[in-house]
Image (cartoon, rainbow, N blue to C red; front, side):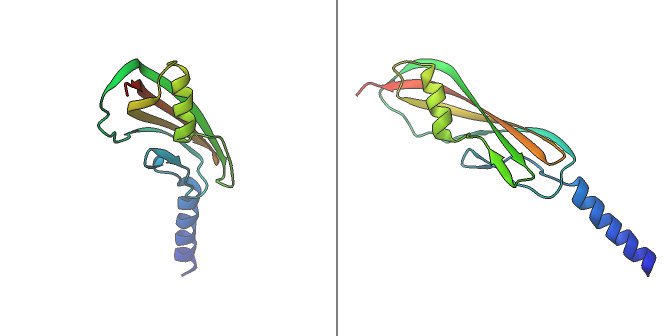
Length: 133
């Protein structure tokens, strides 16, 4: 009985220590940092496309504008950074003077976690446009 209890307890402890995030969580294109226990090491990438409305009567100012932001999390207790859509959009529009909006938005996420210190780099690629009306 004691041996099986030790075995089950050891298996549960190992699963808690060696498990972690299975992927970068997203919510409508925004990053959600989740923690599932102590993560010793993980590295992964994912992407998302934000559904676009049918923009009409616009001029393309610049294609492939990019903006990057970084989020850091320490054991999901202390979180730092700003990778909001509004921040990334403002940085992308700085590269295309005269543009007022973005279309064809693609979000790429790269996560690296070592001993509970989680870093997520978000890269947004889009087409900068200006409405004619």
